[in-house]
Amino acid sequence: MKLKIATFILLTFILLPLIIWRLLSKFPHDLMTYIGITLIIPSFVLLIIAIFQLGDSLAVTPQAKELVTKGLYSKIRHPMYVFGMLLFLGFAMVTRDVISYVVCAFALVNVIWRVRRENRVLEEKFGDAYRTYRKQVWF
Image (cartoon, one colour):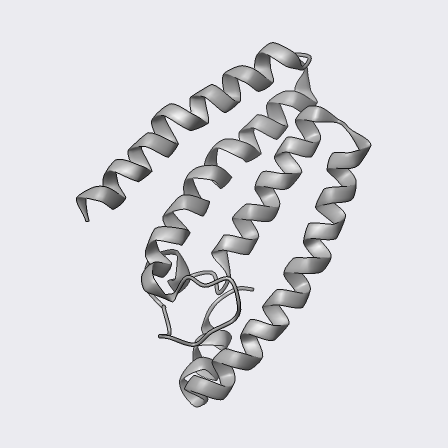
């Protein structure tokens, strides 16, 4: 548990400020940059929280180890994807690079595909419990 807290602190209070500082030093200080950074900061923190809350259920391929319904998962079915996409969008808004927007589009298609696969796997494993959970939360 202490390692998780230390990792969260390292990522949030050391890595994130370095990323923001780098973005602010390289890109223009205008409304689009500030909106992008405003998306990046909470998305980054909430993405890390979602990863920690998923715990041992985190996997590269869809697996149904346990039905996680606490924390962020009590409100959003796939918070890692939601905050990951917002993070991508924030970076794209700051960099304003066509490649960043293309990556966002491909990431969105990938997220939709993965969510559908995960929903099937979870529904097969947890049945009615998962269907009830799906009705109670967003995305």
